[in-house]
Amino acid sequence: MSERKLKLWLIIAFISFLFTAMLGGVLRYAFVVGLPDGIQFRYLQHAHSHVGMMGWLYSALYIFILILFDLKRKIYFHLFWITQIAVAGMLLSFPVQGYAAVSIFFTTLHLMASYIFIIQVFRDLKKKYNRPSYTMLKTSLVLLFISTLGTWALGAIMNSPLKGSAWYYDAIQFFLHFQFNGWFIFGIIALFLKYLENRGVAIEEKKFKLFYRSLLISCFLTFSLALTWSTPTWALFVLNSIGVVLQIFALYYFFRILRECHQQIKKFIKTPAYKLWKFTFYLLTLKIVMQSLVAIPKLAIVSYTIRNFVIGFIHLLMLGIVSLFLIGLVRQFRKDEGTLEKFGVSLFLIGFVSTEVALFTQGLLLWIGQGFLQGYYEFIFIASLMFPVSILIYLTDLVKTKANIFEL
Image 1 (tube, rainbow, N blue to C red):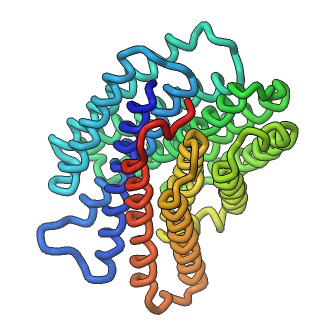
Image 2: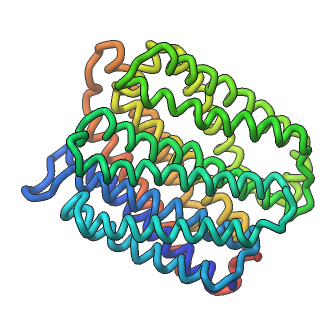
């Protein structure tokens, strides 16, 4: 991929990120003042989540998969533009009609493009060495495909008497679980390991296999937690607990892999990227610790009945772990860190930490029956405004910076 094309595609991905953040700000504003007549909160919610996942995160992962795994066929470039048309369609249609003919068409278009992408990547990588990064990438793409089965099931359920039943919500949770804990997490780890491999860092095979197997099995087992809200049986809680334990093992082996090659990593990873990636590792650790707590059935029930915890956990994954890793990857490929870029990332981090603290603090207060913090909605709305502002600053720096800013 040429440097010019990389810059253009990253700008497009960050524009999706900007719209996602703006929609998030509007959703927060709704709790402070309300929305004008005719604007549906749920419709905006659909636009916010779809543009964030299929616009920003999918696009950014897609771009760096092509770069790091050296995928150059023209079909990849055509597929990228098809997905951007789909994202634009979702952005325009979801706020107006929610799930209806137009938005479903564009969502389906994106799904079809992603299927072709998965097939093409498997074809191009079938003769490659069975290195850790290739294993993680292929697994992430399989999990991406698995997640979309929830979307198809959701479409069928919505046109049946099961609409609004437990099956309806289980299908949504299936999609979200295998997107967040599957496609996104395995995808960024694949990119990280491939970057290390491209720099000549060897990953010990035995430790990687233990890490990989533990993480993969835990990904499937921890989905059982999402089912316990409608079917709170002891068997599902046990499966979730086993998955959580395996996730702790996975974190342990990942830590050992990083520790063994830490000195090599510090030699070629630039300080701005290193700091962000170090922070995302801490956030990944925090995610696993939080999931370990929900191995206790009573805490598991609390985790999905208090909405503040649910949103806080989703943002921890999307904004903290995945988005910050991808921003760190952009930083690593840039030759120099611009002043605007540095300020934009710092403001984003302040917004992220502030909103997460507010969400989980409020969740804890609701749990112990203390009600709402005074000025909670106003505070979290103002803190949420830091996201679109910081992304706009970052995007401005990316647009204004002249050619030859990336090291490919």
